[in-house]
Length: 209
View 1 (spheres, one colour):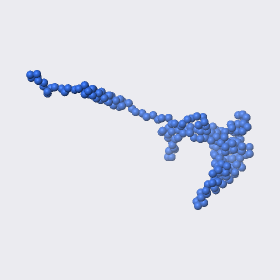
View 2: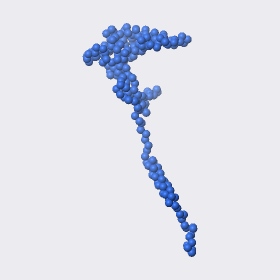
View 3: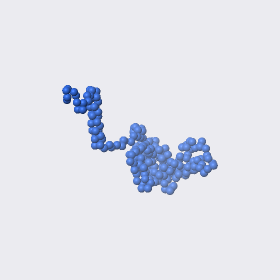
View 4: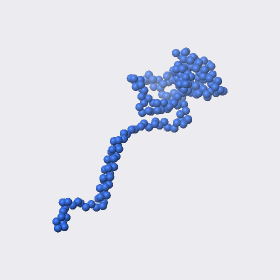
């Protein structure tokens, strides 16, 4: 300093209070940003699969249905895979349920399914068949197929013993449980009807195979 004059080379710029606050805020943001980046590097992000939503699983909603995995089957290896853990509900017939419970054999369940398919050709079960326009220009004839199914059903029905026809009508064709049979008195009566169902389907299988 010479004669009270200020040496401008060593003098620092004078900051206003507003500029000082902005500088402090900038430093704070940089410090927080650095800490945030360190925290992001330290933590590994993991995405968990959310549970599959099937909607309301009330007794009325899932009546007659099964909850199962919707797995995909590899055609080459035959292995099932379900990486996304997809589940679904599938309608199950009473024949399928009795087969799963071990009350019907594979042969009995298969012949029951074949009988039901043949019964779908009957007019009472196929109300739209009468208004289907038959295309005679090609080989596909829906009316002829329906008639063939009806003939097959009546041939199969003739092979069923008379004592088993009511219970087969009720369980196989109407898809109703043994418990809902008209006139059911107790579990012994239900067991007797199950025996008739088994013997009737077995007789049909042996006659039809």
